[in-house]
Image 1: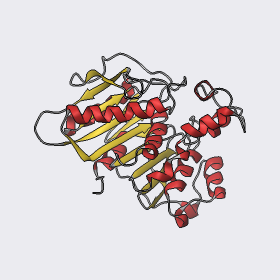
Image 2: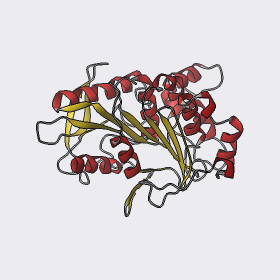
Image 3: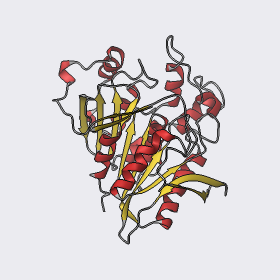
Image 4: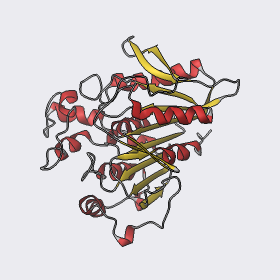
Length: 318
């Protein structure tokens, strides 16, 4: 479902992933490119503006159960059309419910190959290649930040999963919706010491994020996620800790308090900030080195204007 709240564009995630093209702007076209991993033909949606000048490239990633046609990603395309950016929305093996998907080596290569396709098909400013995703797309954004940090000028990850094994067990707790996909993708229940646990580790952003300390990374989560939504904010906070200087890391007791109480204690509260977040009040923010984490008054969602305005200000260091 999409809600437009002027001047805020807010995407609230639904459980459905529509597959039609009717809601996509007509300027966006469906393309295929060859995967260097297995030489298969992989689909994506693509837009390139007219003109000889080099343009920023936005790589937008679909959600956990989505695919390259999901209509909740149309705001990314509309932004790129308005701003004159190149846009690509790859499939990277579709929904995260099978071994070929969910952070696999095929997924990593597919996303890198999508970037290569865009660079060959449009005049891309390589100092402004951006990555954005929410939920499962936030998970894959953090994974790709660690797997290919040399590419990205900025990565914006919203309500991401950073530890697949932890998330699997969190979703088994009473009152929470059962998770679908981790066991199917990783070879079974990820019990301690199992091969499935090792596979979860291999596919989790926490394994690689320390490599991305030189990349501007913006991590966002709604304070109520994990209560009314599906991903506890601990995933965002622990991801930030891997990118932060030692003195800026949150303690485990602080993380547990934020997660369990779904509120920010006075000692951690941020000054009132609203830039591009509209009605979504920023409750906690911390910047360290090139990473930033924001906890806002919301749930399992993305504020599109906050994500894309932050990305637009980023440039890759020469």
